[in-house]
Length: 186
Picture: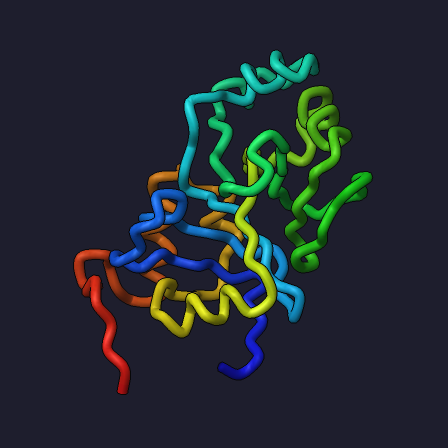
């Protein structure tokens, strides 16, 4: 497979995906290069709110409008570590700038800012991330495990989690019911 860069794209799990970590998932790819790929599952809220997360890590949450927002299962790697997908990118201690507008931050300072000032106001908090070794994602694409489509910030930050996967599918002009769980090769 030719070199492809899926940074700032969505991965949509095909119906045949049986891995329970990724079945019916929408992954936002934050980095993809010759060393592998890193992404965040953005449609799998867990039974934890921002308020309970802040309480657990002993941070004040002055911005009560975020209290009931869900924390998400971001992927099976480093489940004990938090990641904040956000826009704008801003200036944080440990941020991967995905594009000029969206960043992925793993440092505590962004949570302090969210709790104190509510900025950035557009964010998704996850525990864990999805990672692929060099060539692994390309192999999975070759096996028709994923559909890909350029990502959009409105899907990430302006839609509830349960609407994100169908919205990404619509970008391709299809719905899940139209997909077969087997793929053919021409």
